[in-house]
Image (tube, rainbow, N blue to C red; front, side):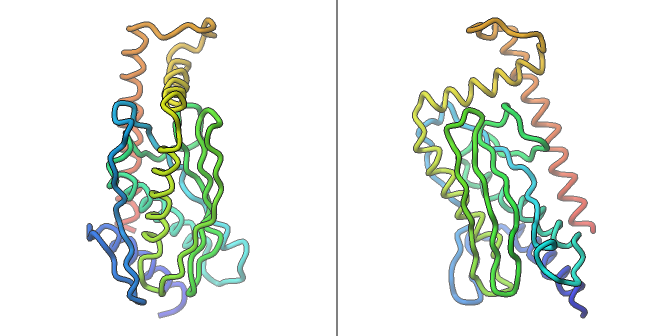
Amino acid sequence: MNLNKACWFLIVSSFYLLLSGCSTVKTDNSETVGTTVSGKNKNSANRLAVSIRNFSTAVADSTESDIPSEIYDLEATLFSINLKQTLEQSDYWKSVRFIGEPDKRDQILVEGSIVYSGDDGLTIAVKISDNSGFIARKRRYESTLAPGSDQFQQISYSISKDLIEIEQELSEKQIKTLLSKSDEAYLQVLYPEPAKKNNSPTLEQSRHIDALKGYDNLILEAIDAQITRSIMTT
């Protein structure tokens, strides 16, 4: 098996492992990686939504390798899917979805890039922000698990823990601001005319916002499902 095929096999195998549904993963060096972060959200009545921008990769540009850049792109997409599933399994967030270009509708935004991927580890640079400027975190997550173990899951688990800690640091007022900014952005989509200052949405407009959110989520869920199917049948 040449290097390209070996890399392909490793990535696809990791993808099927992350879909296995196990509660923990034993690595080759006997470390245990949790797959689910859970905790009661103190703001259960005002839970925030997390948007994930599909991760990119800088590995192909920074290394001399005969591995096609498409393989690294696939690795970044698979990590994005793994992270989304980990956040969903925490049952902490109102919703977790993929997005294209970020905007004010995104209450909490997670984006980043794989900066190193090799036999001796995996490094991913992550940026976490929000629609109101309360959160501005940048961090590099590193996995030093043995090759063949679930490096994706170790990093996804760490990001999930950090996101919950970040949300818990927000005040109730800040959380309401994030939700309000998101609703205003949806309102702007429905009613592009400039809104009057301090003019709250009417009951009818609020219903339209809720309907648009539901439609928006249905579209994004369909895209998510299509991405997953296309990878599994590749």
